[in-house]
Amino acid sequence: MISQQLIQVDTRGRGTYDLSSDVQSAVQASGIVTGICHLFIRHTSASLMICENADPAVMRDLESFMSRQAPDGDPMFTHTAEGPDDMPSHVRSILTQSDLNIPIQDGRCALGTWQGIYLWEHRLAPHQRKVVLTIQGE
Amino acid sequence: MISQQLIQVDTRGRGTYDLSSDVQSAVQASGIVTGICHLFIRHTSASLMICENADPAVMRDLESFMSRQAPDGDPMFTHTAEGPDDMPSHVRSILTQSDLNIPIQDGRCALGTWQGIYLWEHRLAPHQRKVVLTIQGE
Amino acid sequence: MISQQLIQVDTRGRGTYDLSSDVQSAVQASGIVTGICHLFIRHTSASLMICENADPAVMRDLESFMSRQAPDGDPMFTHTAEGPDDMPSHVRSILTQSDLNIPIQDGRCALGTWQGIYLWEHRLAPHQRKVVLTIQGE
Image (cartoon, rainbow over all chains, first blue to last red; front, side):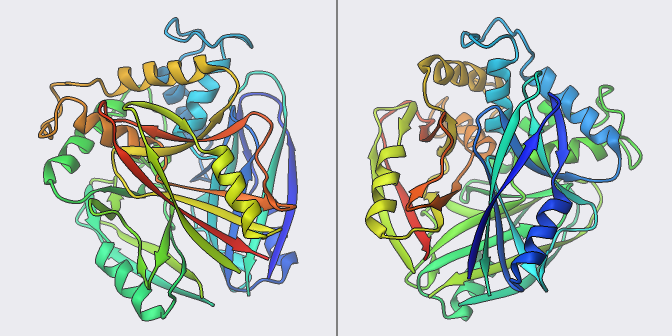
């Protein structure tokens, strides 16, 4: 059995957006008990991530880390057509994930206690992001 | 056809643990000839990786690399409740993989000659880690 | 339904190689309308990536970024048997992807407008690279 749908996320600019409950709801609605839930983001300046879901400081520290790795306006970058956050957003995307697979057990995503599913918007400005959800199994 | 099971890994602290033979055994036991083997780690301070399987220096160099990228005790990090290796473990996790998919060909994971499947424990202390294995195919 | 095939890429050394049209052709030939297309690279010094497909400067900037993160000949590295680009290639590989999953919608990979599928050769010398393509769905 296979079902596919779109999750649309209107971001308010750079930061993380928790998709966990949207994904869990879609998995439960699919009726699939054992299988795989696949997420795919159709963009190259926002990405997906499984990360700690309890302390907001983790997300702030991840932003600090990425800002040190690939600072906005880094003079090394030449792809700057859309501004100082353009190329750093592509770098952040390739260092994280464009797609995620999560096992479905007993009709739910088998996330660990401290795991959440996040969309990470890397651009400073708000964007409308599309995530394709494909649920496969029995 | 789909089968699911748990691999439990008792780590002795930071370092890599080779899961290749456990995964190959599970695939062979499943009876699936053509398909996909999926691994998912239910933690955010340990991760999965496909890497060179011959020279132990590779793993030492990867540890050096990650220690330079996200040093334990880095004053930039504020999420330090569980110690100086807490936030660096989350960073190392998001830079590597929470899930892996490996093709099954002729009843075996079609790894290249030099590829191994590793769990990477990022915390300094020993932990019990859970990896969900989902095998799908025909 | 499941189909599997090999894509072989003869690289001319370090750089990115666009696999998008090869993958789209294979998906269309499979006759699968809804599903998942999986790519797996059987090497640990070349990797896979979904990235911006329009401006060649993006690829140049990604090379610059990786060269700063893990410079060839970095004295930190001890795994140097195959030369100064040996260990940096493994590092670049673990920071990007060994496998990718792309949703199939209406018989095509549902890539975003600006997304391409790339093999990233990290070694300086030309290599013959093998990518296993597994297409699953209905």
